[in-house]
Amino acid sequence: MAAMSIIAGLTATKAALDIAKLTLDKLNSAGVDVHEVRAGIQEMLIHVVNAQVALGEANVEISELRQQLNDREALKVIEADLEYQIDGGHYLRKSDGAWCCPVCWGDQKRVVPMAPMASGFYRCPLHNQAYHTKAAEEAQARALEEANRGLRRRAGGSNDWMR
Image (tube, rainbow, N blue to C red; front, top):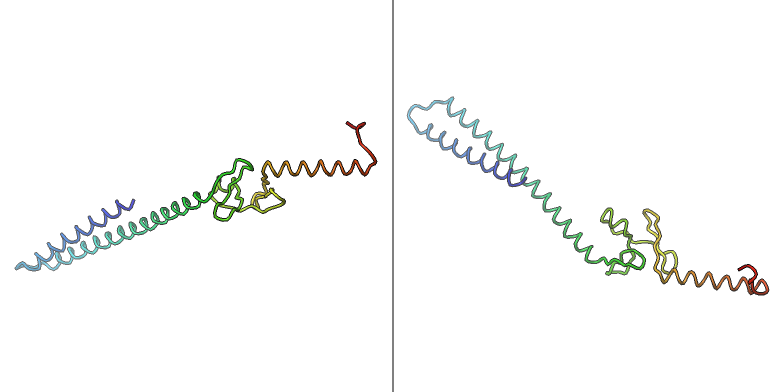
């Protein structure tokens, strides 16, 4: 967690400052022990490096958290632009009217515009699932019925005996 890294960095910084104060006090005293001063400076450097590492880790974590927040905000914007259509079982992107695949959005939070096949029929280019509205289905049924009537007329009469 960033808070733990920041606390560790601040603790190491405080320890380094405390050692620096003690080392300066030793330097200002009458009988300066070079080995004690050297040991104090080495310990201070260790604390400074620990502080640098901890604060670097906190910086990375803060950057990752900011990216996650940006991703969530972008997802909310996309989600606000999508409207689920019960008739057809798809999402409609309000900004441009594109039909978007409900499976891709539901599984991966990916907005995948579908390819139009015929009036009211669309297919997802990723997983090849087709979607259509009830009106398109009814129009297709009417067209099929009209084609069947045309065939019966060309055949020379009704096909009542087949029913």
